[in-house]
Length: 256
Image (tube, rainbow, N blue to C red; front, top):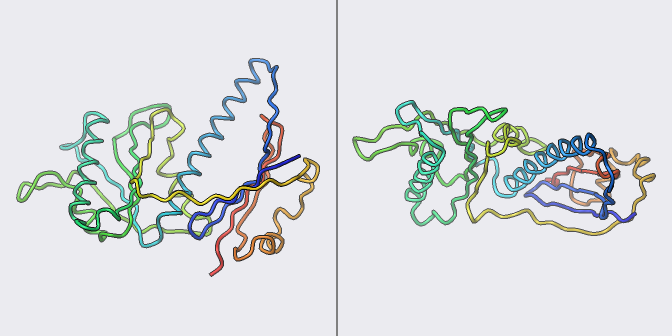
């Protein structure tokens, strides 16, 4: 069977997907199985959404950059999501004003949390990932309202340097997207100057039997010999019950 091999270059990280290029869908399926498949597909879609966000972050930010947590005090707590959107947009404008001529180089990803598990409301707050054009203190001190002597903090804010491991920032992405599978509970936006990961695609021929017996899947030496200049981190093989096919996923990092 013809499979697709997709190499996704995210900064110094490399992800490789080996997936079926043709999926034969089952025409007849009882109601219970259809519901089970829909639930499984929701989980897959949620994981893929977080993964794409993670890839964009890896491709645009490094360990000099910051994760910002931005909350509201009772005095300035927004009554609606629309009001919170206006506040965070004003914050971004203050950053750009502070940067002046460097504002075009400002990169950010914004996640606003509005609802929690089962759609329950939570205190509206924001997460941002930003590059290091300002210092930690400068980012924190701009989370204010008013001008001059009337300036007041909007609430608690904290800026931390991004802490990468061999798999990147998966824990952080899971944290800021912990309710992403609930409709309208999360949404992320980003600056227009974010660079999308570079992707290479090519077809390969593999049989299901060969994949089942693919004993080299976890062999570090095999993959490092096959993919020059990169160090093997991890791999996994998954069987998708919905489509009845195998999927292979690899994580590698550029050798220093």
